[in-house]
Image (cartoon, rainbow, N blue to C red; front, side, top):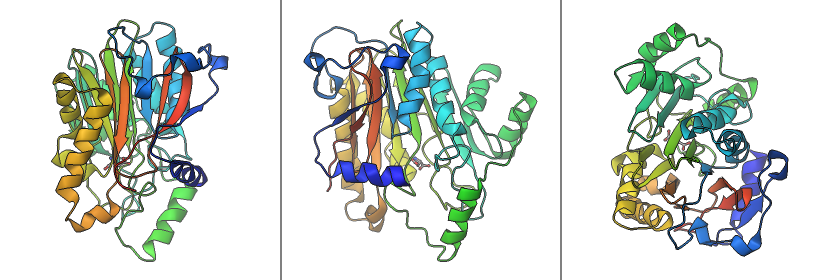
Length: 341
Ligand code: ASP
């Protein structure tokens, strides 16, 4: 929570992307070279920038570090994105992903995740309880079953069969937050705090292959059984290895309504840069919501990474940030450009 406030304050500095360098030297990532700085990672030429990893929010920084260990050693993007988002899933201080995630209105932590590789292989789990690493279960669904998506009890049963451990994911801090919420029991998510914190990660590896992962405990205080965009291929995550990749965070209902990530990829196919494509879908969502009462608590953010290793992001309101790691500038946090102040 303290971190989020800090980022909100920083976001008020303006809509221009502001890079924040994070320890990269220790990882063997080259230090920042200002001469190479390009707007939102766009090179404007045909050179492919790789590897690159981009992920949502401040917890993207440590997640990128983990992913980079694999990417920098020439490893596969799929392994990198899985390992990266597992960092956020295991962190009890991240109140929106995995262990430590805030529960639904019945006090249950329910998790959604999906993963996708460069050959249209994908796996997903939704409404999964008591399993700390839903992203790894999603990968098992992709690799060990003829299906793409498992939900609820079936997903849990499958996870246990695959050797995952059943554990309590409701931390004392999350339980305390839940008890406080119960006093009013009102579903009106606080922007950038209660409705918004999924970790979505996209990577291009040394071979030029794209991969993506997305994992969340979803909107806090949601109706028991609610599933958001994050485990839905085409909504929370999508990629086409010939074009690019995209992922979302924010109010899942808005992302599902617009097939958000798939649209971003299609806009890139039509020639838009990652940044332009993210902006266009955010503007489309704004048009749909501008006269709706739920605009009040709508926040959404998209990240995108294309086949050339160019990245971009855009969000509806200030407060969204994302982490990018590449050889040019190391691992840094960038404030997302936004539509509404
Ligand atoms: N997209 C997620 C959901 O609606 C929320 C988030 O980004 O935290 O479940």
